[in-house]
Length: 247
Image (cartoon, rainbow, N blue to C red; front, side, top):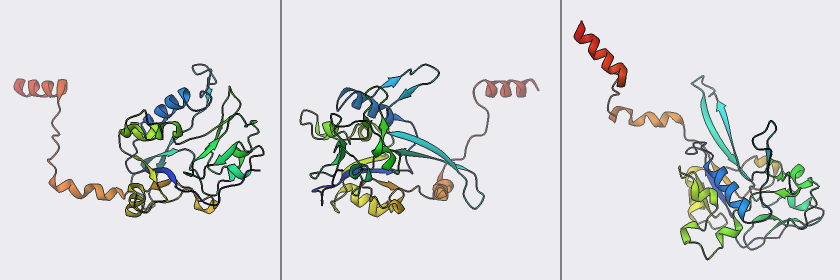
């Protein structure tokens, strides 16, 4: 079995804002594109246009309809999920070959695909369902935080972040060192009350989620907004005006 490092020099990870994520899946597409062409074996797609499509993804977005306890209108929340690069990662300690490991220099959890035998034990051990077996290569796939991108000195500085962070149009994804209390991501977690996913599992995930703000705060600006023009527009507006003139 594989041992975890006693400590890591940094704790690189993601902070995901559930209040601003719009569920557009741009992060999913960017992740698939970058990781199909770079680190490790390409992410396979089997029978993508057939009756039973199958493929490997390192990042997925799930959408949920939640009805508040007070009986208010239901709300839709979009929940991106990928590897959380846990400090006490059970996927690492269960690996029989050492293929799954956590780096001491930055805390990123990776898979050495040359040593992976596709046994699936790490996927069973992960309580978040963040690992997927590639249907073509038969090796385990997971988020790498774009390790081949964030250290790439041939890229402009602004591009040295995970592909999902770089592409998010809503600014819902943030990347940085969560082991540094003065980093932008650490300050964001403190200011917004960032939370761990399923803390009862005891895995101590590095990635954090920012909870949605109460929806009633949105109405604070309502008195200052221009009234909505309820008159019909387009063809219906033209028809309404024509009928008025005829009457």
